[in-house]
Amino acid sequence: METFDQLWVWQDAALAQSLGWYRDVASNRKPAKFRIAGTIPVAVALDDAPEDALWRELDRLTALFLERLRCIRDDGEALGSAPAGASLLDLCCELARRMLTHCNFCRWDCRVDRSAGGKLGACKLASDTRVSTYFHHHGEELVYRGLRGSGTIFFTSCNMRCAFCQNGDISTDKDNGTVTDARTLATMAWLLRMEGCHNVNWVGGEVTIHLHTIVEAIALLGGGLGGGLGRPTRDDLTKALPVKSDYLPLSDVRLDSGAYQGEFNAPMLWNSNFYMSDEAMKILRFLMDVWLPDLKFGPGRCAVTLSRTPRYWETVTEYLALIHDWGEDFTIRHLVMPNHVECCTYPILDWIAEHMPGAPVNIMDQYHPDNFCDPCNPKYQDRYEQLARRPTSGELDAGFRRARELGLKFETITYEKHAR
Ligand code: SF4
Image 1 (tube, helix red, strand yellow):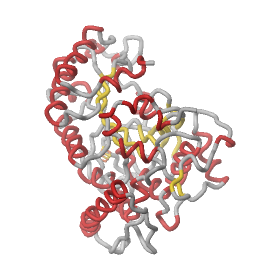
Image 2 (cartoon, rainbow, N blue to C red; image 1 turned 180 degrees about the vertical axis):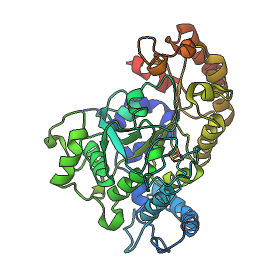
Image 3 (cartoon, rainbow, N blue to C red; image 1 turned 60 degrees about the horizontal axis):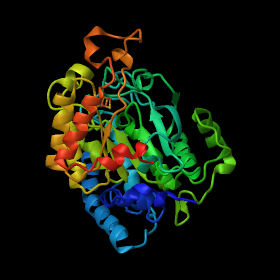
């Protein structure tokens, strides 16, 4: 029987190279980055140290982490064991918790104390995290959906306001879904992986705004926070299972599906609009094995007029350049929109060609009018008339042609659903 590792898509040597680490972790040949972070000891008292001391410690440990990652990835070095005291995973948790009290998870930089619950930021959230649903996603790119699906967890609310949002029920209704604590979230991820999913796909709405709960869940999966999740209890499953939207018998859970040296293992996938902050990026560098950023709008005013999001272009391109400079595994998504080829699609493809010509790109053709752009929806607003139709074949072809002329690596990922 064909395995994830034998998918035809890996015959594309450039794609296989771009996603080499992710593929190794998905196949349990390597430990995920959060497992490596769990072996690195911290030299400050997490409860007592001021936040700037914690950031200095994070910066110090970055070099150690990267060297350990290199040794494990390139030299086949053993993972090592968890320290007696706090690890880099615990430090990431503590920093995310501190950030929540003056929220700077994303570029809005609201600085509100979300832990107090009184004043909310642009994402409309306090400290609670809500999960709308989670399931084996068979609609993602083949490198992510594989044979058993991408283990996708959908979070509620967003820090952008795209008028055409195709997940509008999740992103615009902050009260959608179920309040989920970190332990239940870890149980959801554990379940998806042990049922055979190839990754844990953190997505929304937007994920960045839930940073504190996600980091804590990953720490629990990695044995942090005083022992970690281990194997979920009946109580954990009782909380997690009602939120799941696909039913698989518990007999489908196989403990060797996601294990490295006998402990939980899964590639972590950050599926995000990338409207983030420097600090969030610093933390996620230790936890994400592969990144899936959207690049939606060009450098003009489209992000403001269609999504009420200032400083979009400089923010998202800055963080894309960062993961590229860091040598991370990633693929970029760009959704072609009607009447936005000249102002968005072309400058985006040009920017990728100039700054990261080898990056795998999915040029997506599935835009359809939704939310405020859908004439059949009571929420429809005339000012979005330009987005009230699907892109024409001429618009789509123009995008593909430009990418081809620029020599971008887009064809395998973009066309794979029609390839076989
Ligand atoms: S996540 Fe972003 S939008 Fe929400 S409060 Fe924090 S900085 Fe503001």
